[in-house]
Image (cartoon, rainbow, N blue to C red; front, side, top):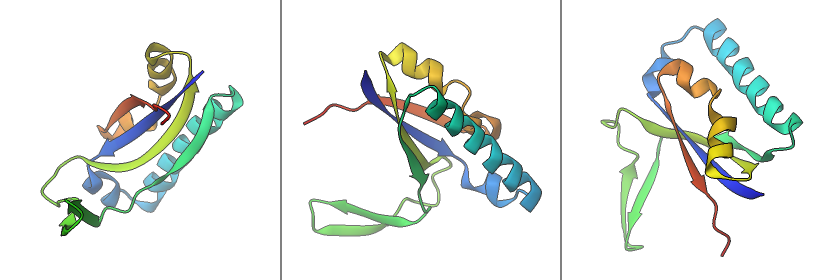
Length: 113
């Protein structure tokens, strides 16, 4: 089995404008999805949400604020799953709740150093 990083991207405004009930319902969908992956034995690290602000470094010396607010779709979190292949990882990821808010999901194989 290989590890695959799932990178979740979405429009931050969608959830910011959601009611508390809508946010709670979405959180439940996420938790149910993650528990389902874990139950199948395919969860390496459930990951975490990422705060929308941060710093961008270039060359180790140039530090700017980021990610940039003008970017519509930003990285909002990640998880790491186990799968036999890219195809199997995509199959696991296909029911991700990120798609319910017009988000996207990037699947990347983790290459051990």
